[in-house]
Length: 170
Image (tube, rainbow, N blue to C red; front, top):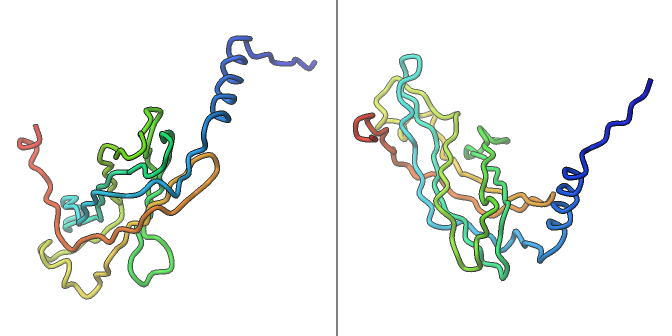
């Protein structure tokens, strides 16, 4: 026996209203979203399996260079090692939520750290002179309404971002 499922009328109306509101209004031009106020380095991720672990880290703000408020933008950040064919790690994060970012304004800082990095027996300070070390670039892509636009490439600085002690962080 076949039963047709029916959505409650309130839910159906809410879904229709949401679809209509996203289709109305001025379109957001992702090419008008830029990356600003960047800070990068290699985050001290502690000791893993007896080895010092350092991972690329990037902090930035999104700036709305367009003429309409921007909302609901997802970001993909790919970490690319110099000379490699593919990314070594990638993260998906929310860039902007439902709160509009007005034209000319910048977002709150967005911090993204890779899970993949370097582990070494030597002191952390020797990372950048190690024969296996390669510089890394964070490639930032913005996504909205099925469109994807590359909005920035940020080279990770050769500096170590220290891990805060638990007592200092409280």
